[in-house]
Every structure is written in C-alpha cells, then in structure tokens.
Length: 187
Image (cartoon, rainbow, N blue to C red; front, side, top):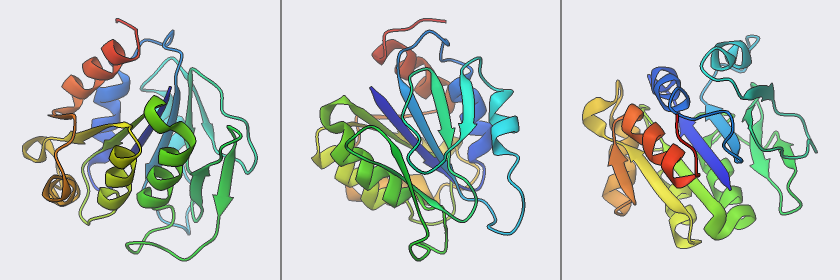
C-alpha cells in the first residue's frame, strides 16, 4: 500500500499525531509533501524522524519506493510517484504558489497506486491537494481529510470537502489509528 500525505500551515503537528499511531511494522510506503521554503535547507527529515520509528528519508530522483519508509519531498521540487515504484522529482512550475505542491503527488499516486493507495490531506491555508485527492478518489484510492475543526489552517481540508465526500474526516490521532487499522497494524 502507498500512503500519500500532504499539508501546509499547521500540518507538522498533524503528521506528528498521525505517525505516532503507526507501528513501524506496517508494510506500507509513506510519501509526505509539506509546503516548505525553496530557499532554506529543509530539516523535515530530522523533525519527522523524531515522530516515528520508520525510516525517514529525503526523496531523490529515481529512488525506489520501500515499505516502512517515509519519503519527504525536498525543497523546490515536486515529488511524483512513477508506475515502476520509483520517485521522480520535478522542477515544473509552482502550483498554488508552492513547489513542492501536493496535487502533483496525489495525481501521480492515483495512477501508481490505484486501489492500493490512500491519500491524506491535512491542515493548510490554500486549496492545494483538493483536486489531487479527488483524482485519487476517482482512481479507487481511499481518501482522508483532516477535520477542519482540528486544523490550524482549515482552508485546505475545507476545499477538499467542498469537492467530494472522503472515506474519513477525522482528527489527526483518529486518522493515525484508522491508517494503522487499515494497513494491518496496531500500536
């Protein structure tokens, strides 16, 4: 299974709560896009690594996907998933004023994972991720949206909820428990 997670303002706290519920034995690939500045060195792998016992790595072009690993999008690159189970990095134009953006990850995850994919959209202050999550839904993936009432910046989750009804709308901890159960693991 592949789990694509995207967020912006306030999403790191949500990622902490979600990954804290996922046992390291879960045989899934996690791909994470958080809007970050393109001009500063990213500390996301270090920060996210403190949230989980799984391996956390910054994505590299053509890097093969591996289970029990969280792949983090690097600054100033869109992270894409290829059908051959590798990561592709792109310098295509910013989307929703962001590179990395969430929509490119979700749109490619829809194609690469199909019914074996899960998309999770978290806190953020624009509409990035809503269209990509809808594409994941259309491809048969399960879709999850953070409850806007639990989000620091509720605009991103609300944009998705205005487009379609996901499989789950919940707080980050509840999302983590749902993922652990869906992926076959228990804390």
